[in-house]
Length: 180
Figure 1: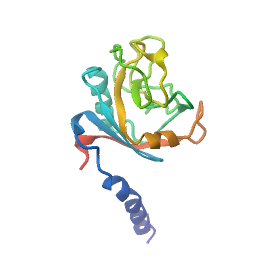
Figure 2: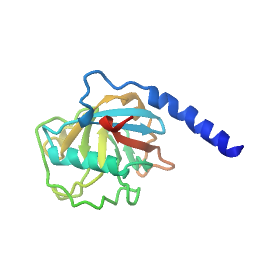
Figure 3: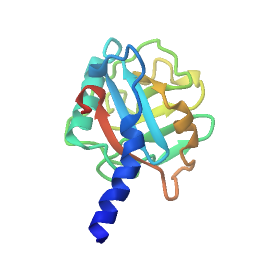
Figure 4: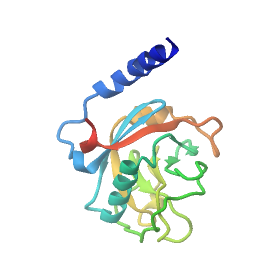
């Protein structure tokens, strides 16, 4: 009986997320859908700006690497960072090698998604951040991989902190084309 109730509860929670439509005209091969503890975020990826970084994000999403990963660093007026599927605290990367920078003059404004890195410009791996506000000092210093096209209101609800205590999570991350 408990199993049946658990399955029904999971179904009730999943139905609203599954029923959400993706934005019209979205290239589903180059978009990721992030279902978080606060709701759904849809990111249009930009392979025209950062083809290697975009491929990495899609690969990690397909690997399930990003599932249940916390937003470990969320700074008001700056950004929400996630993507450490190894240590969950911002110190880990994936099993794949680091990527060489793909900097462009694209401005880091609200909703832009960039790759996090260490000091070396060529150290991005799996972590990324969503801009909560414009921060021009990041321009030409970090790789832009996409932009939120739906769900910025969800990003605004993500719990703040550095580090975040009891953080919100990316429950499931999928390439939009893979969603059945």
